[in-house]
Amino acid sequence: MISTLTRYLALSYVRTAIATLVGVVAVVLVVDLADRAYSFRGEGWLLNVLQLYANLSVDLAYQVAPSALLLAAGITVSAMRQNGELTAFHALGNAPARLIGAILVTCAIGCAGLVALNEAVVLEAARKAEEIKATRFRRSGDFRAYLEQQHWFRSGDRLYNLRGVDGEAFTDVTLYRVDEDFSLAERIDARRMVPVEGGGWRLEGATVSSFDGARRTGRALHDTLLVELPESPDELHVRTGKPRQMGLFALWEQIGVREKLGLSSLEYRHELHNRIAYPFAAVPGALLAIRLALRRNRKGHLATALAEGILISLVVFTLLTVFRALGISGQLPPILAAWLPASILLAAGLGAGALDEWKGAGNRVKAAPSAV
Image 1 (tube, rainbow, N blue to C red):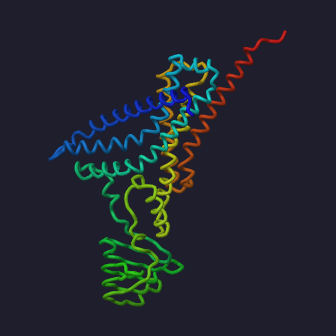
Image 2 (tube, rainbow, N blue to C red):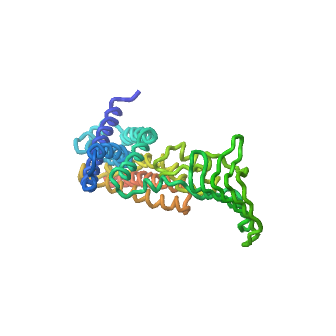
Image 3 (cartoon, one colour):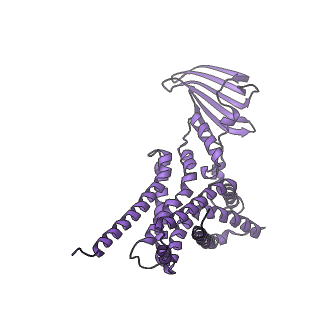
């Protein structure tokens, strides 16, 4: 059963985290509104603005929530220190581990909630915000670019160029077959490629050209031509869009499809791991913030905690940006790139605690009376 003290610590942390999150989101939205104000015009602009910022606020809250959680950890401990509660906490015989544990467990529960909330609400809100910016306010953005159909695929000794989509069928297609030296062996151009029930594909208006090196050795025209391809319609319909706006199941599915078609899946695999690692980076970040707030001879309280929290947040986002670039470029395995920022924060938090304990032990030795 949760004790009264643990419940008090957890509730104090939750209240601080919510207040911090609301404050940060409000400030960013006001700044963004001022920046975009000149583009808000046309019929129904007010309703469009309300819809845009309703969706943006949800997406932004998810993005800044880890920073709010680690900021709140330092602020909570600093407020207890300023109000004399921390002195009373120690006077009752409580170890710092109890305070740290109560806050970190609450933080971890909040991180798990962020993962679930992202899947249920945030993904759709982010996609909707991008759509509104691109279609209703004519803001330059990448929403439409991400909706373009993927054209080129590779599967074994074949290359597919699928230029158009019509339901499960493809239009204006070209299929290439290459030999072991990657020299062109066959090219099929077709007006339309339609899946056949039971397997296979039907090419309509097909032209088949055979090659020997750079020389064409044959050419045949077919009104319809049946070909056997290992891919199903679902596999060839590679889902487009930002990986960040895909659910966990869709990411897992797209990784398999892309790897089968010879497309890079590095960004998708990094996003799959980062979907968990990003919110949970708040836990080691909160540990570091708490350890800094508990250090001996610390000067200042709330202002110092706020400054330290902002600094930790900047370090977190810098680490996330650097390791993401390394992960999606193939310099690091995506799983390592996703989890290294949290690992570095954990090492820093444990190191800060160990250093403070070492300094405290040294002070106690100096203060101990000498034997007569």
